[in-house]
Image (tube, rainbow, N blue to C red; front, side, top):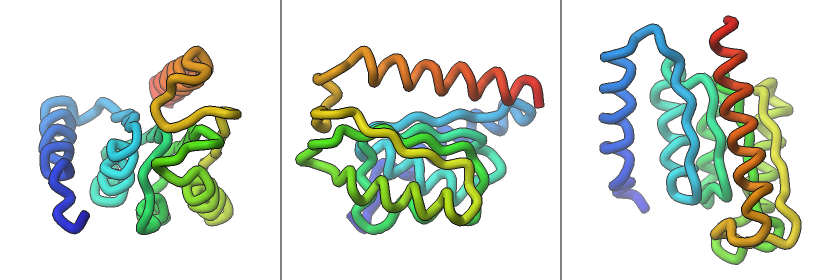
Length: 141
C-alpha cells in the first residue's frame, strides 16, 4: 500500500551493502512483494542495482514501470495461471520497458501459480542461471 512498509528496510540494506562495498555491483531477486520493493529500489538507486530478477512480481500500480529511467538487466518470471499477482500486468510492463530500450525479458511458467510449487525446478533453474550469467557478465565489465 501507500505505506510501502518493507521498502525502508530494503533501502537501508542496499545502502549498507553499497556503502561497505562501493565497487561491487548489486543483483536483486524478489518474489511477489519483493518484486515490488525491487522495482522501487531500482528506481531510487539506479546506480547501485545492475540486475533485477522478479519472480511473480506484484506490480498493481505499474510499479514495474518505475524502472523506465534505470538501466538494469531485468528478467521477469511469472506463473501463467497466477491467481494472486497478474502475469498479464507484469508481462505488459516488462514489454513496455523493453520497447523503451531496457534489457528486459518476461518468461512464463506454464500452468504455474504464484507460490512456485508447480515446476519448481524451472523456477530454480532460470533464477540461478540468470544470477550466475549476470554475475559473470558484471565481473567482465
